[in-house]
Image 1 (tube, one colour):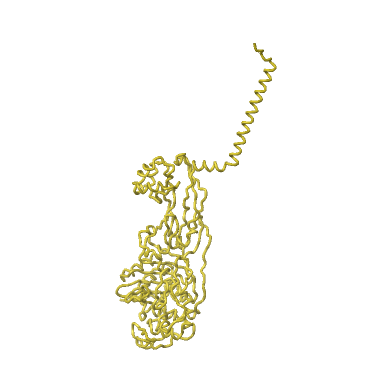
Image 2: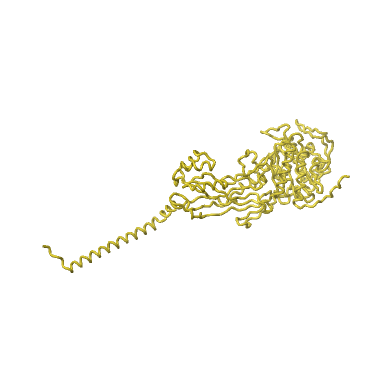
Length: 574
């Protein structure tokens, strides 16, 4: 029979067992602490990211695009809140069923929608910028893996007004043309990241709100454009184009003292809210990106050069060959047959022969720098994308080429270049840089930058500019070619022009661009206006087609600007 252990030895054994148990527990606890430390320190960030991936999602959301205002603070382009529908395919319970339920609401084919959902992407846009009724119906379905996020959509409250100048924005919030494109980086701000809590199935938690991790809304722009003048320019141009049964037209209104563009209009017009519904050709701002031969509106540039060089005086007389003048093997014609005309008379009557003789007396080497200095053959520097330089070849011109350039053939210019050159004549000989953005504001409305007028250089003396202006005043008289641009109560100066169109490198017979450029009131002009009518049918001279539109526009613009009448109004006929 085995002997029972003595009590003392039993107590020692129990003590050792207890100590071993404590040591084991201590080692186990130390292991847990060590493992926790290792997880938190060495793998903590990775695990946190994994948890966030499962229980949070991050969505890129466009910031609020900055607004565009006219010079008086009127809205031209704004951003409005709008819902967009997205999917997280990996979080869906029934992809086919989801596609069938969403397709009629989103006005999409279920197969097309299913193809989108089956893309190997954790995030898919289903339809962006939907109307509120659509997002409400999607929200009511509460489909796993389908969500709604609020973005902003560009909206142009005045529809067609200023569309060619403003441009338009794509669905991704990127400016695609016009001011929207030119100043896209300022307007769009910095991309937002939206973090949303979700359950394990990818459904937004009902109590969770999105957290904007990064947000910087776009800057706002204040333009030089005057909304009422822009509206008048578009209406008067539209009337002129319709009356002439023309293909289209262009109009520019500027302040000759500063270079500010007050209006810029094109016909046909388009609505930038639905720009994709129009032909691409309709979207071009032809005032800045298209060039054509100017015709007789170019003659004042020639005459300014002749006066500045002191080769001619306004009263000097030329023989105009009774309507036909041969230069080598080419014959230059005038519409009317003139014998002798003064230099001023050449401008008033718009004699091609007189202009050719003046140009030949100047020579290419002396004339070319003046044309260049008036801003032709190079971009004006306006803050509009895609500006054309026009065409001005180096001055190795044959005599017939020099003669043709003298009355606006063999050179191409944009409507904006022409208007800016006439602004230099109107303001005493200073060429200004035309501009559209007057002020840049931050998202809170504080001024970041205010643009000042910029003089590019003096092209002629104030005296030469005054003499040319007097000649242009005679054009807008009953005896001149631009009498229909006259405005009672204001002295208007201007010039008509009629140019054959060059299509595919060839002059097209019977296809014209009719133009008129004027400024008022003389002697202190506040506004310069150009109107060009493209391919008029029937009457096609600038004085018949374009001058009346400029006259009607000036009758509205001058009162808008608060310009008082400077010429006595004729009493009504009895």
